Length: 334
Ligand code: NAD
Ligand code: TDX
Image (cartoon, rainbow, N blue to C red; front, side, top):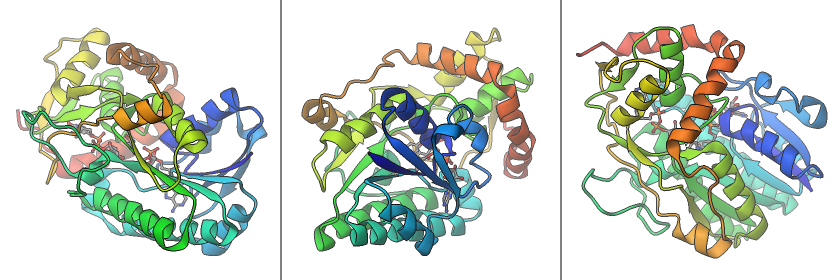
């Protein structure tokens, strides 16, 4: 099977490539990645000789048409992915997340190629802390940020291409991922690398916002289950019952790394900060028989801490720029 992976030099896409090389060695993988600030071929160290790597933009229609013509399945991970960046400058989010998705949809339509669209639970907006509800495939779209609204737009485009043009597509909306090779702008790697640098972790607002954490390998095993056994035209929510509030996560990072649990700062809150995300993965589990491997968050977190400790050369080049960007808008509040 010839698999085109967009965004394969980013966090989830690169882990997808590594997992696929290990578990499906017959797959012929081509990665299309623009190598933005968020992508690096160093995330593909160890597999570069076994794949075809193409540096390019998913919004480049001619390039995409050519690559899709030579593929059996497209897995579309490429995106601008960080909420804070989308508040500072929404344009790259529109170009990549919306226009880039249309570029791929038109190519898979023309060449009749199977397409899987990677999306996020953030398209559903947020839940109150005391709401017993979780997101399901039937939850109405209600995104809060430029990032999540462009992801929501891309999902709706996929649905329209399925209905109007019969494109063979599936969509997955996953909760917050953690694991190796995640950019240090994101919550968990930012705090782990801060602690390594003897800098106090930074919590937005009161720190009681809840995220539903899933290990990146569990996300990617679910993506393969959907590609192989999912029903065309369907959406599947991916989650591993991992709800934790941010304060608890920071405290776990600190204590696991031998520091005092209270050794963190509260900083300026994110504008429009979603309160809680929570996924009901019943459809994925019942219909496709998928189960996560990482069922204890603290074990997955410890393994992730070890990875950042052992791979400083991977994250060090991105750390200073990231913190300089944050310093422009975030002040310590207490
Ligand atoms: P990331 O920012 O780590 O990686 C994105 C990759 O896409 C980078 O390698 C970047 O160079 C590439 N890219 C960006 N613009 C491009 C363009 N125009 N053309 C080609 N390549 C381009 O993101 P991630 O966290 O790995 O997220 C991957 C996907 O998963 C995204 O679609 C995101 O919305 C979705 N998602 C992420 C999470 C999460 O917790 N990180 C959760 C659910 C869904
Ligand atoms: O320094 C921080 N301090 C902090 O308290 C950072 C970077 C974040 N936070 C908070 C904000 C969120 O409540 O931690 C939580 C997680 O933040 P992010 O890592 O920025 O993730 P989030 O905004 O929840 O979005 C992530 O999950 C869904 C991914 O970045 C998205 O791509 C994905 O769609």
